[in-house]
Length: 223
Image (tube, rainbow, N blue to C red):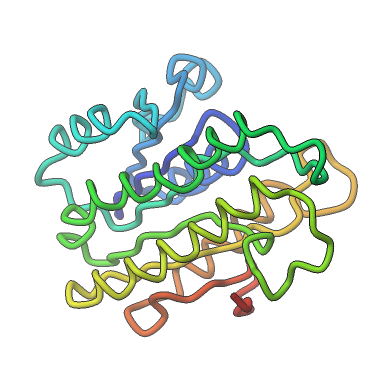
């Protein structure tokens, strides 16, 4: 049984990660802004510990890390994030952009720094960032989305630096693009399909893959 810590489990990919890992018999620590709502939706999930956490609150993150002192975390998944919108140049919301920087970029760094020692104690030793191909400079052929793109490009750089700095501890640090996920049907992957494929990437990773930017299907993406 592995221990998995996942941020942003109120909905979407984070919630699906928690459910899938728990279904396989793992211990899951699912951080949420509203853990009571999560518990109400999944009352029978005894392997999931829903914990209240605002990932931008550094002191709250530190308190959770201290509470889990001595717990070996096999997989840390930095999933919490603001997914959009993707406006053109003239409609960029600077207030939202600043919020995205806090949630999408700075918070995953805070989380990873706080829990690196927990991951080092484990057998699997993986820190995964749910990033986006929209953070790839090489793949940007359509412009727009200044806020979201910049936060994910920055996140990719944080991931790469952490991979180098945590290399001596044999921690594997990955960035994974979840694919085109359709929340309510239609074209694209379902949450279940996306998470299942990303878990395959995580499961097949090790120290030699650290610092790699992956697509959900295991393809390596350009920076």
